[in-house]
Amino acid sequence: MNPQLSEAIARFLQDLLALLGEKGHVEVRAREEEVYVNLRGHFKALPQDDPTFREALARLVSLHLKVALHAPASVEVDINGQEEARRQRLVAQALALAERVKREKHPIELEPMPPKDRRVIHLALANVPGVRTHSIGRAENRRVVIEPAEPNEP
Image (cartoon, rainbow, N blue to C red; front, side, top):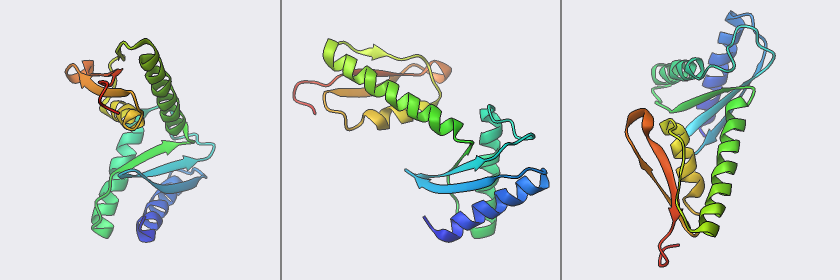
């Protein structure tokens, strides 16, 4: 990742935390095709369990990067690693279900979930031999199906 990009994100969010009277640490790292930002601290004003807040904050950071550095970037903001932990649980669940699909040789249809979560599952299982994934349904009823791969497929 471009160090200038990382520094701009950290500075922007440190300044925002200071404006809110909050103390914390900003961690920035590259992840897949996006920038992952984790705010660490004991926050009073930040709603840690509100995905809408985190998405809005990520849009603000992206807008700042676009204006200040002319560098558009996809950003995910997390608070105290809660979203990252949820993502890891989702990957672990997907891997366990893939093993079950391979063992039982029957597809499993997951509950409806947002696009970001579906993408996590598709990526987690993309290189798992013996299974494949696809999505079915529309809008908020869209869900992932994990199914056995055809015998001639990996």
